[in-house]
Image 1 (spheres, rainbow, N blue to C red):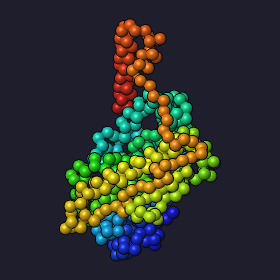
Image 2 (cartoon, rainbow, N blue to C red; image 1 turned 90 degrees about the horizontal axis):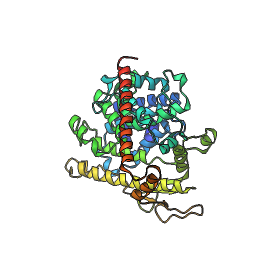
Image 3 (cartoon, rainbow, N blue to C red; image 1 turned 30 degrees about the vertical axis):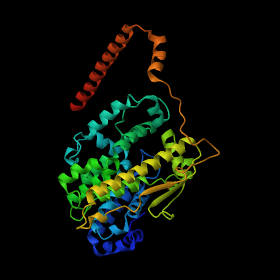
Image 4 (cartoon, helix red, strand yellow; image 1 turned 180 degrees about the vertical axis):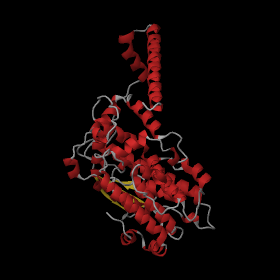
Length: 429
């Protein structure tokens, strides 16, 4: 999908269309940037996330559309063309790290790009990967099954793209999933070219590239945790007509709200077998959403209707709705803290258009297929532990001491192994 000015105008409310017509430089840069991201997404094949729900350019545009829907009309007089251009680019950038290919990933974790890293993270990508790989070797059974669908061993990373197996891609995919907010930030400020991509934000100033990347990054972090950086580098309320905290809140909520069924088409799931139980559940959860609308008797509510077929899916939808309401509450609180008393400048009008989530899931949901409750078996852990250990080790304290010594020995051996890995890497072996 190619983003055009006419399409952008069809997404924006009438009061904001004049901004994109009268300030062509910022909007043109944003449209060109969005189309460079879209071209990359179409070509990448998203190799590490084939079983994930939609993260294409359509998702990026849906996030932007939702972000605009979440803007209270009283905010329109405050929003600038710079806000819109930064928000469009951040919406395309926020998941871009999930689109890197095998070759680009090898370049990321095997080369040093320190000069292109953001100033927030001190650990280079090769070290970040080594730490993750050591952790992966110790994944417990539940984590292994959740990611791979089995409990087989963790494979070493290949040196050539052609040697990647599906298991390698799932392993790398989990790493990218955890770190894609930071990766989006680095790609925005220059890592794109080093990974063989075109300059995705060409036309933006260095400051605005950092803002795009930082706002994109913020969707994976606590909103307030970003204040120190913004206050140090920019301004919490208004920086050259960019309202950073406001855009961060919009992007975060808009991305969180993308759970519609169109992100998980049934035909694709039927054609491509999904091995990961977590991914299987996420697809079913998306398919269970039958309607998301604002046309409701409560004008400040987002209405979500869902028909889950399994109790695990029901619980996942319910948790998502509760978390989304929590994010809305936090965002209102942050906006009040940052903008609420700025009545003279008008910044107090930077507000959301929604306050509440309404859903059949939250309102006495019933089903003929399952009992809509979280039912679990609980035990008294200390007593259970003694029952499990006594038949193996008895009650003699010497057995416990032996286990501690054995664990200490294993830890020393592992430390030596990790040290050898780091030494070999530093020596280029």
